Length: 444
Ligand code: SF4
Ligand code: SF4
Image (cartoon, rainbow, N blue to C red):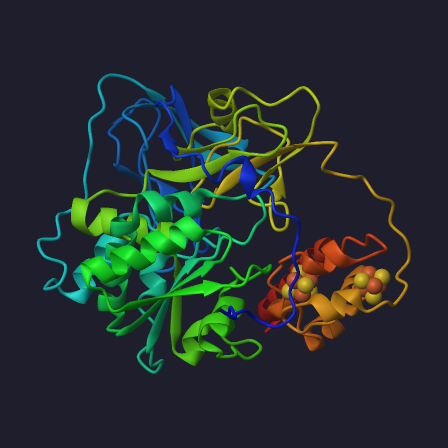
């Protein structure tokens, strides 16, 4: 059977074998958690607690009235020790609520939704917001916003993203195998909110168990969903690529999936939606893959948000002595980690430790104009130009060449024979464009 996919893209070596067959284990409760106020795209939350306050598991501890945001919850029962700046996995120090675990676990659940099929859409969206749900594939865009597109956007299709194309990650794969029914229920709830009838589940063909399990339960439970096995290719998990792979619809430059009538959500988000709506559980934990050749016992762990990464490694037999690099997320889009005190956040799908055997430190050479980056870019951009304009601080040119359409997939850097850190320059370029826009706004 010819499998569907998108144009361009690449095939990085697959390292899922470290953990793809490791059933999800629940990490023991941590003694301390560090909950960042900012774990999502949008406005940062303000603390609602102070030092010395007792908090329950699931209690909202920081929030904002801004629409594009998501509250954060205590992930354990205990006492607020302080609200200070700690190391954040995104590489900076950020304000976090430090909670020390004390006493028996007590829960504060969300307001109950009696029967989601009959509940008003507003009630479902409010529950999803109160649950603190964001895109758990890594994008961390607030889910209640995504499920409430403007009225002039006619949505006709929903795609559940089970692609997980980053080479090491297996948390979504395991969730699809082990929590199939809850994921399908979450998908049904999201489609109900959007009033969409056509539902597709995109899964890359390197997850045969997940594909078989999803197909089986879709039929047995009578859902009108179509499971779409996809050819393995990076970065197919990016929304625009996935929409093309599944529906052959192209999302134009500067447009969003809703502009072509589609909403995409990740399988872990669907799982969390089902837990929030049918079990009144806010988002206080997630599945995270702890893997790499630098980890003694790779695992998929259900970990409370705010748990320091070092606790996860301890539960996996610790990292080996010759670990060369640790990153959160996959090697293509992930962030290098320098502090293992950094906590699990809503967007942490994996933490990967690699030894020098799998990572080469390569010298950088001048561009030889081979065009490999252009041929690979799934967004049809000119990565070599964007990198140069960024280095030369040519902000107008960066905009002209569509820098903001770059999805930061890292494919251009991956294929570049001159080892130019193209995507890093593009990230810098985006910051420059945003700064210029801010200055222009202030002047106006
Ligand atoms: S320019 Fe952006 S979208 Fe294109 S390959 Fe590079 S990182 Fe990916
Ligand atoms: S892949 Fe590297 S060397 Fe080739 S054109 Fe792009 S930037 Fe230049």
